[in-house]
Length: 550
Image 1 (cartoon, rainbow, N blue to C red):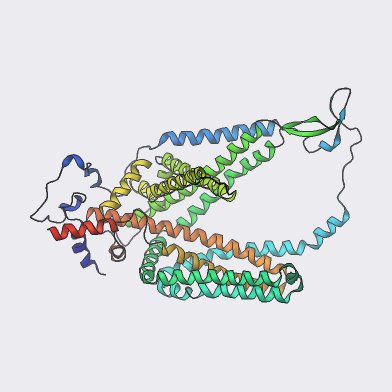
Image 2 (tube, rainbow, N blue to C red):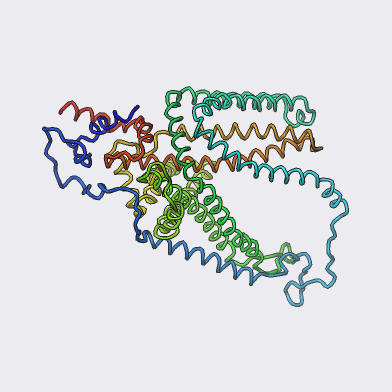
């Protein structure tokens, strides 16, 4: 689809006779016949005429949520320091105390013996030392190799997108079949596995996996007509990400900073359980000593865990903000052949400065959704009966879906314009609605294909790692466990790469919508691909009616 066809289609879609699409009347002439427009029924749309990346100084937005987040963090650290200072050193020696009837309290025995670790435990540790050595070295090598693997995957998706996608599709089916059949045969041959898993259970598991593979095949066949568009979208995102490779240095550093930030909170949680005292307790006329925690410890556990969850979701939104701001600066750059300087630094400065409250609010909403959804899933597992529980569950799921719908593309838009969270959510919805684009990105196949590619790539690596471990070590059956852990580690690293690429796709989608809204073409290659996305169905019929009427 060339660019020469886009203005015709855009002028058709943005007919100024439509009461809902008045923005591009300056770029495209209106027809001679127009309908009267009630001014009171339409909001003021002039604020949307100049949507673009905000390079200037940005005011602070959503500041109360930043203050709230800082207060929660300060309370967590303050009570944590109190927990460390106020800990009871005798918490681990309850067995050394006995009840004293004269003082009606627990007193420490004068002849408290220390338990000595048996020599057999040391022998077990020494005998398993080679296992831990091989495991650590395998994980370290996997972590080191994941960096060139990610770089190789990015270059392959950038230059050979179609070949990589079509070559990986058969492995989406071949790999599960291989693992399923290999496990079935290996478990049948092994006497210990055969005793643990009877033949009936092995056959049921074999059939279940084949049914799952059938679902994968059905998904591929049902979405086959969208593969070409998916290939083009992944290629565009890989190209834009390759022009901003500094993100692969900044984003891991942000993740590492979150780990460093978590470290003292974990220490506080450990010391918090040491706050209490040893008290006597009566049972059947006999007294014995037990450990009793202070009443504020459970409340602090709740506060600290919620703080960690909020911080994690805020960090995710911070990374999305940095990605969106960086990619948007590349998209709207005047010089199409170069990457703007200090784009990552300015995006990071905006995320930690004027838009820090917006990031905290977005993280709070996502954290609330995750907690409520976990509570709903837990209640569903308990199989609570009753029409009231069913209605309540449906209402909660509808509310969570609405929040997810609201949050879609909001942080991307906030990174581009610097607006507040609620304003960004409203403007994003109106922007996509005016341009007949879906508020929920219609091209979700790209995420599934990227996840499948990561699974195939990691599975091949795990097979090679297992073969090497069996050849050069004496791990025996433990080699499968070590290879499985290496497979999980590589999936986590490459999954982070896919997460970044997904956010790049969403950001380019929002930038393309802004281009359509302004009647401009900042990146010709993006328009040639994204113009093939389907328009909103609920606007398609009304658009046809207006066209026939004209």
